[in-house]
Length: 170
Picture 1: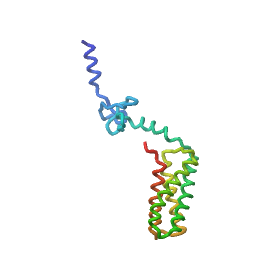
Picture 2: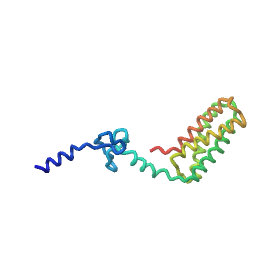
Picture 3: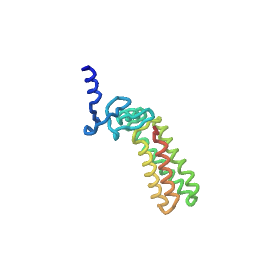
Picture 4: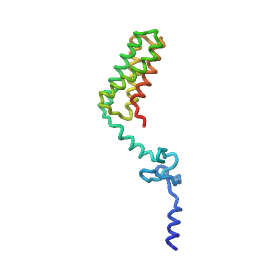
């Protein structure tokens, strides 16, 4: 009979989130088993997982080095400037700019991925998009200025395409 009482007390214990000790919870990570509150939980297809386990799972996809970041930045700035110059040559053909800008941004990202042997880091997509944007702005300052709608279309579409091409969608 004392065993039943001990089992009841161990089941009725209050558990607290490991990150927020003031929050009681019964929610446990399906990978490591630690207690977590609702704000610490990440919903996955197989249940709730803590943020640390999710980050550990994502780390398998991010294998880049510091040199890879430099390569991505250089390729993106140079490619963004060349793409901006090409769009500036076409000038008033804004409908061509809409079609070409996404392709140019995607090609810049694919070239950067090829040169880094498809290694990505957590900041690679931001560096690639920022490089394309910086190169496009540099090109606009040197050649056309910002008085043409095609320059603004290029900056927005090429930057977003470069970001989307480099991003890991888990």
